[in-house]
Amino acid sequence: YNTQGTHVVTWTFSDGNGNSSTATQNVIVKDVTAPVAPTLADVTGECEASVTAPTAQDNCAGTITATTTDALSYNTQGTHVVTWTFSDGNGNTSVATQNVIVKDVTAPVVPSLADATGECSASVTAPSTSDNCSGTITATTNDPLSYSAQGTYVVTWTFDDGNGNTSVATQNVIVKD
Image 1 (cartoon, helix red, strand yellow):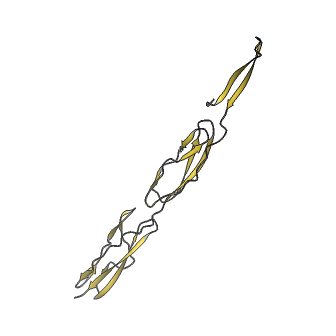
Image 2 (spheres, rainbow, N blue to C red):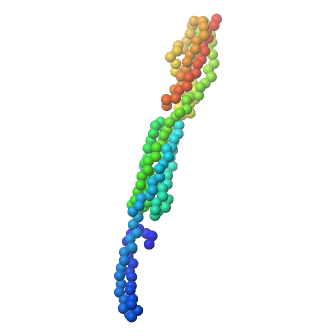
C-alpha cells in the first residue's frame, strides 16, 4: 500500500482438509514525518530584491515547493523576512525563514563641474547627478551661491541618495575683472 489511510487485509488459513478460518489485519499507512526544511540563504539587492519559492525534501512526497503569504519582491531599504511553509499533503508541515536585504551601498556618481566665472560677480546653481537607486539627485551646499568680491572660491556640493551614501564634488567660482 502506498496511499495514506487504513487498509484491511483478509487472510484465509486452510488446513488442506476443507477446513478454513479467516483473520483480518489492518495495514496503516500514515506519514508522520514533516518535510526537511532547508537553511535558506539571504537574498540581497541594492535597489530591490526578489525571492523565488525554495524546495524541500519529504520522505513520502519527494520534492516539495514552499508557499508563502509574504511578498516576493521588495524595493524599500532594510531587512525583510519571508516565511516559507513546506507541506507534504499528509498533514505535516515545516517552516523556514529567509531574509531579503535591500541595501544601497553605491554612492551617487560624482559629476565633473565646470568653473563658474564672472567679471564683477559670479553665481552657481545646484548641479544634479545620477544614482543607481534614487535616479536624479540635486546637490546641496552650505557655501554661498553668489560672489561679488574679486578672487577664486570653492563651493563644495554634496549629493545624498537618501540611503546613507553621499558623494562630494567641488566647483570653482572665479570673479576676475
